[in-house]
Structure formats: structure tokens, C-alpha cells
Image (cartoon, rainbow, N blue to C red; front, side, top):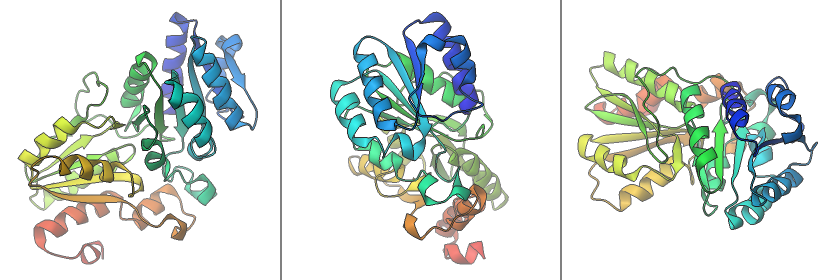
Length: 314
């Protein structure tokens, strides 16, 4: 997914001399293609993420379109004050790219688990918060972000994400995309959970349940119009995110549905107490939190069958 994004950034930079890319001593084997083609618009600031944000804000306020790139935790929480004061307070045209969403770097331990970033970044004023579910969505989000008047946070998986099972139309800012139709329930997934959601829908189909799958690339602004429509179509909506529940997609959805006459039951799948999480691979961590396809399917099936989720997961 990160390769697709940088390839597109190079394409855009060919036609726009104001596009710059900054990194904090990361992105090797990914960013070189930009650095080689546009050395005068590429800066590796070293291990100094907070300085990187300040430089990016200064360039943006001088009329440049700036992308900054680092690991999720390093580019968000380490730089939170600078993002708030230097970028958001001025509405600077900076795209903040955080790679390693969720447990992408799971085996490297808690310092590299990107779990709280959606919640933290959603609290900042004037900042678009995005989590594309595959390469096509990542490219679409970047195109929108580079034209948007204001800052954007793009949360990236390390891999390519879920394959597009339906022809993907142009994604508009703040809109969700439907990957699978269904009548009994709907899963609204963000980021890497899109693939797990599609897998869950396939599992549930064997049990006679028809489940729609929607991707939510934009958590801020949230597609409240589509959420309202889903509450009219489905008895149950399950949100799925590889991040903390408090303040994430599920929280945003609950707040949105509180303002409409929603009849649907809302289930929220995510991560609870992060400090209790052992050091695991991403696959194992998703299984640990029942965020894999089987776990998501069990959550929905429990509502329809009356069984406890723990019984369904064995």
C-alpha cells in the first residue's frame, strides 16, 4: 500500500513543482524513487519527527504541498503538539502519512503498535483522518488529500490490503464504499479490517446470513448519510477497526447514530486495553482480539443465534 502511495506521489510531483516529501530517517526501499527524481524537494530530517512537522508547516505556509512520512506512533503521538499547533491551527496543507497501522509491526512490541492514533487524531480540529483499505483506496485518498484545503492524516497498512471485489468508483472525500451487498446485517470496516470483513461475510453466508460490507476510508469527516441509510436497511451494524475502541470508528459511528432515529443495533469490534496485549504477529494479534474474519463473523452470529461469542470461537 505504501509503494502504491509513493508511486502516485511521484506521478503528482511530476506535474506539480510545489510537492515536497519529508521523512524522519524511515521509508528505506520505499521513498528512494521520490528522492532520486526530486532531490531538491526531498528532506530526510533524521530522527527528529517534531522538527519534521515544523519544517513541513513552514513549507506549507509558504505555498508548498507537503507530505510527511513515518511510522504511525512516531508521526502522530510523538509530534502531537506540533501537529496541533503548527499544522491544524493554521490549516496547513500537510499530508501526514503514518505507516504500520494497528499491529502491522506487532512483533516489534508495544512501542510500534499503532492503536491509539485514530482516536488521538480525531480530536484535532480541521484534520481529515483516513484509513484506506487497499491500494486503490490509498491512491484515491492521496489524490483527494493533495487537492484538499487543509491537513489530512493517512493511516497505512504495510501490505496491499483487501482486493477490490467490486469495481471501485472514484472515492469522494468523506464517503464510504460498498464492496458487498447484503440484507441481514452490515459490517463497516476501516483500514486493514476490510479484508477481514469480506472474509467474515463469506463465512456467514454459509450460515445463511447475508451481510453487506462497507469500507470507511474517511473516519473524519464521517459519511453520516450512508450510516443513516444503513440503519434503515439493516437490523445490525458492526464496525471493525484495528485500533482502540475509545474514540475510534465505533465511537464516531455511535455518536453519529445518536443524532438520528436509528433502529439498528450497533456492535463495535476493536481493541480494548492495549497494555495487556502481548507481542504478537499481526495475524495472531487479530485472532487474540477476535478481529480476524472468524471473530467478526462470530460477533454477528451471536446476535442472530443468541450464543455467546466465546462459545462460537471455541
